[in-house]
Image 1 (tube, helix red, strand yellow):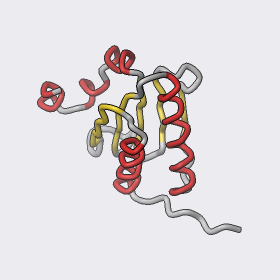
Image 2 (image 1 turned 120 degrees about the vertical axis):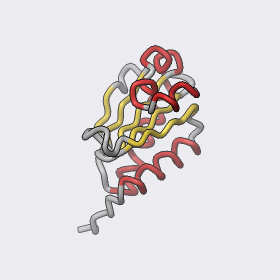
Image 3 (image 1 turned 180 degrees about the vertical axis):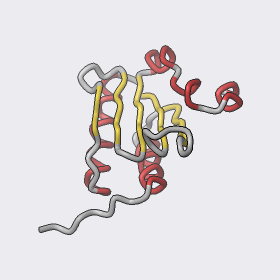
Image 4 (image 1 turned 180 degrees about the horizontal axis):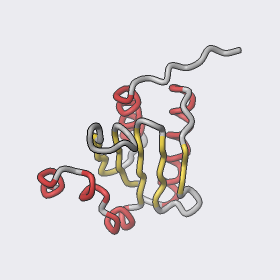
Length: 120
């Protein structure tokens, strides 16, 4: 039996997710610290893909990377449409949008502190 993977801290997971998304050319990446503000996760990452194909590919590859490197299984929703994919890794929630869909929902405005959202 293979040894279990170290699930890592939420900070290590966040760092790896951001590193992965930057390397894979995700656009307009935003990290939001949810600690003390929400019970759903410690962090939220929001980014954009240029097309439904890229959104889907980013989600699939990120899920595989998290499983391989951290031994964590991610829940994925929205992959069939490819407009907005939600990945729940437990400590970090990742939203990958097509730009038009991201603009419509404006999640950053809901979760970022008001001063940070106004700077956007």
